[in-house]
Image 1 (cartoon, rainbow, N blue to C red):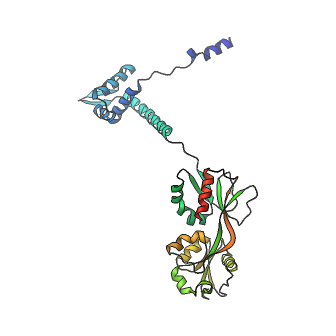
Image 2 (spheres, helix red, strand yellow; image 1 turned 90 degrees about the vertical axis):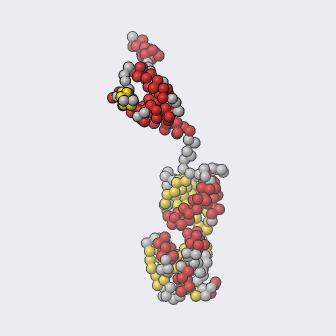
Image 3 (cartoon, rainbow, N blue to C red; image 1 turned 60 degrees about the vertical axis):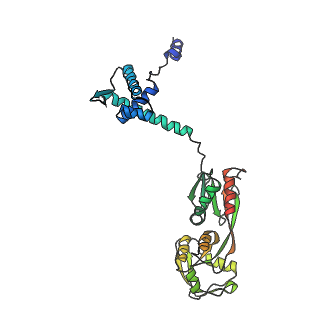
Length: 309
């Protein structure tokens, strides 16, 4: 008996049937008339005649056995039943419209999540994003600020300076070598820097700007450039490297600036580099969990980043 009952439940005749609906075209006519409060305006919107709208509404009323509109003084007003059907039809057409738009839209490619050290992100990468979009409009890129070790469960790629060990399991693509040099405002340079070329010297009372994030920047530059710092040079310390560069542009003193972070300001004349730039032995790399396959967004992005250096 149980087997027989199960068979009855699974048979096509036993399955729930969908309630017969009025024709979609008639529902569209009703929804427009109900929304606009006018058969004439509904006809104009749908490019039909007033009579076509009236016949469509009448066909639904006949099928449902209820009045949807009251006709008074040559105007139409929704009944309580009409209001219920209007709300249901509007929600259904909104859902259909949204689904059709999604189906017609091209599939969205997942964004590459790129982590970048904050100063490099603000001063180098973000100003060049329009060029990236022009060169590779199909690459969707999501940027996040970060430094140090990378967790590739949250990001796809990361730009880091090789001032820490990232491990053998990480694939590293060289982007550019770090070059550093003192930067200052042009007015500060004229007042505090004497001579030119190898003969250029900082004034003894020159204010040197330091940062907690790169405390040895001046010492590293002096060693790489084979120069001596003023023995009694005044100094001012900032919490972050980025702030020392902002202070240098404001004329507070001179800060050690990496070329990639200050090149735009030097080219625009906001900053001056009286001693030029020298390599400090470090470099920036694009890190990934594995090598990027040729032609993929990651490989195209890596090539574009190298070209920007």
